[in-house]
Length: 107
Image (cartoon, rainbow, N blue to C red; front, top):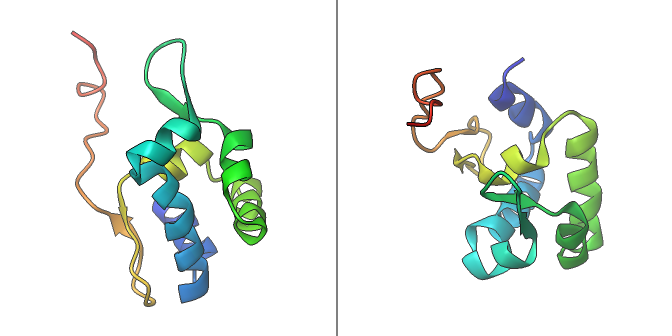
């Protein structure tokens, strides 16, 4: 099962998709991102789950825990650019990601 298949199977209803959008908004807002992330020793920012939970409403924390229990990685949930329609159309990547091994090499 791909990442998108997993997200689409977990977020079937408009209500669950709205919860997903609400959680993802904490990462897209640069001010909120600084409050819910830490700088990784190897570079870049990673999600601080405890800080994120402190900023979310209880029902969003419960929803986030259900996503994590189903195997969704929290960093990927927030950082991967997705298009999340509120109707029953599938969730898709909002831009093409180059996941080839050549693109991952640092020069």
